[in-house]
Image 1 (spheres, rainbow, N blue to C red):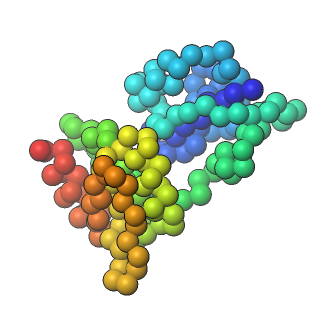
Image 2 (cartoon, rainbow, N blue to C red):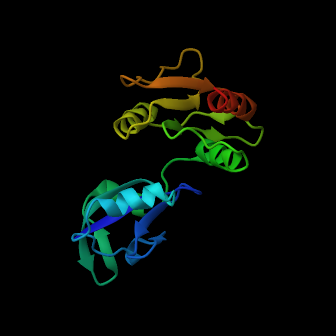
Length: 175
């Protein structure tokens, strides 16, 4: 059995293809073994999902169960904070110009607006580069802290807080 997963474009939540739409419940996923590649391309083009892909799963009485542990963990909910990406999505949603499609953002936003680091940034940057992202907005790393390894072809823009992030965003959009 194969099932399709991705991230909801508005919330960043993990979602699963239920045959007609995207569900936040893996139990709703349907077998897409017979679907062609156009399913995911169409859904991404309609801007309903981002980073979609097909995974192996087994059918259980409770519904599909992802075959690989990383996908089972993913099915239980987010493992990192997507605050910065959500803040950018909300901001660009009110603007005439969307965030460029090759830009990704990682970081947690504190109550005072500061952008905090997240774990596994090097791994996340690698995966983002593999998926075609070319610019990453990331939290500034503190003095003495090891900087993340930057994948070939990716540009890193460090941001300190939401104001800094929005200024950077406006520069990107108004080029």
